[in-house]
Length: 149
Image (spheres, rainbow, N blue to C red):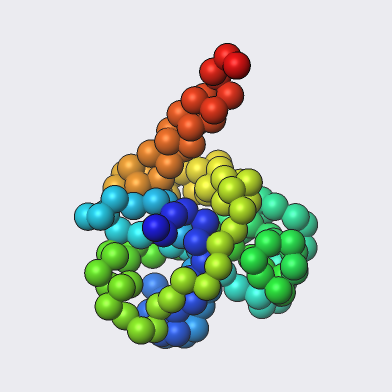
């Protein structure tokens, strides 16, 4: 089962500006069978990006230092663009494959950063895809730690 935090490699992603390229994508949701996968792309191109761990609110980025999560290079998760892709377009596409995953803490921090700094730019349909993950995780934690032993 594919869940939020899964990292995919896409050999021919069509970017919002029309260009096509190879990209690592991070899955932000755990979709039901009829819901799209909601991805953000990543970059390892430093250019003028800060190298401060975590959420970079003024840039709508999340920085992951090399070898601290899935990525072997310093990586910036780009929160300002999201890519919905339906499951059938992933399973039938040899250019997209799952290559790893981020730990639960990191993906939670990425999604939290997204909501803190891109909230006004998140369409309602994307928010619906993301909010159930928070509620589901919260319920799982309550169930795990709320029971008396």
